[in-house]
Image (cartoon, rainbow, N blue to C red; front, side, top):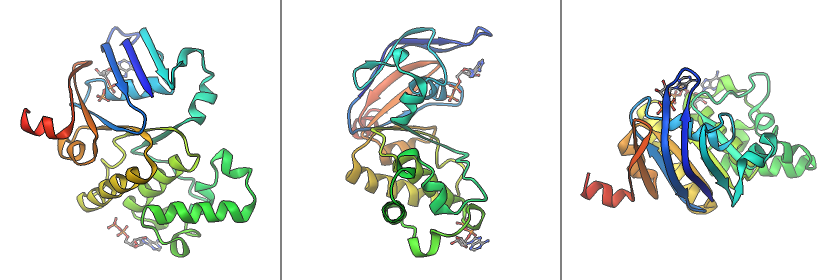
Amino acid sequence: MITFENVSKQYPDGTRALKNITLTVEEGELLTLIGPSGCGKTTTMKMVNRLIEPTEGKIYVDGNDISSIDPVELRRNIGYVIQQIGLLPHMTIAENVALIPNLKKWPKDKTQKRVDELLDLVGLDPSVFRDRYPLELSGGQQQRVGVIRALAAEPPVVLMDEPFSALDPISREQLQDELVKLQKEIKKTIVFVTHDMDEAIKIADRIAVMKDGEIVQLSDPETLLREP
Ligand code: ADP
Ligand code: ADP
């Protein structure tokens, strides 16, 4: 679904953030990118939706070379969840979720039904949360809304960059469980960045270990546990 072919990135100041990465993320798998701060995880993610262009190499999404896809069009097919999810404070949770372009075109009652379904998926009672404002939610609850907002447009690919890192340990574990459950139902292609090995092992189908701009190991969680 996503293929990196000999991808390198050198920033204008000379920093070599990625060195000749080759990697395929299969359709429907949850792949985690793990590694210490500065190893190139975010750079890798940002190249997939063309927030950053590679210096060398090619990236394909669903078989198409993304350098020839309009970035706006590309991002319509790629959900993005980050630590600071940025819900709009003056809009209710339902309004925030329904901002997604394809929901905006739907009749009102259909949109509401979809928003309620999505809230249910992440364990937020729609009758309670639909009409609340973001600041009336805990951090963990806001982050759940961020996850469903990224999913609402039903993009085939979802990128998640340390989405749970700012949360307290309990919310974090709950969200990890929910993501695993959700992924069983929706089977999206997900790339999930973390620096936490426990988190990676818990949620991933495969784990790519990065170090100094390179992928130094690629395996499933069981293998990684056996041969660390
Ligand atoms: P990670 O997400 O793993 O923490 P990044 O992809 O953010 O790593 O960064 C990889 C390397 O590239 C780091 O050395 C970082 O300092 C550098 N880097 C990131 N963004 C820029 C930039 N805009 N200009 C120069 N160097 C950058
Ligand atoms: P957490 O410990 O998970 O960060 P909080 O202490 O922020 O949670 O909130 C606990 C509960 O109170 C949550 O269910 C949250 O939705 C609710 N809550 C927090 N702030 C408000 C508010 N201003 N109005 C209504 N409910 C709130």
